[in-house]
Image (cartoon, rainbow, N blue to C red; front, top):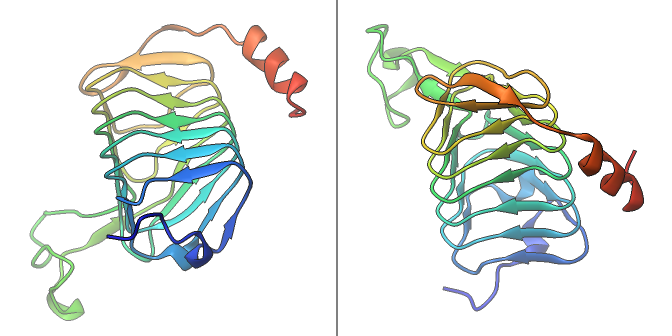
Length: 183
């Protein structure tokens, strides 16, 4: 294992970026990372990713979906420890044999859709997010929740499946972001 992550393999990388040496980004040429980003030990990513500024990805986060999968994380968003982001998945409905090693004519139907974190969207520990979900600006997903549908802005969600439980205040965060130079 290298002592540090090989940043030069990434499509783009900003300033003040820490990536643990114990991270596996399967397709680094498809990944761009902004500034002020920390990616902790155990992060595993197989998809194309656009990671904005002031992002934290906690330990042992998995983002799967292969070469056609897409993750977009806008500024000030985060994913906490142990969470799973699924950008593509076999449907498991009997159309074929599930699994990425199965030849295409025999393979199950695969649902592929981007997962998008808008600004200030945050995910707590051990959350699972399905393909095609957009976490709207300022939405938060509580620990151990299952997100199967897109969220509403500035709303907190919990449960299996995740449901809205209350509004999230936004004014102070938006003011601080403006102070950092973000509109």
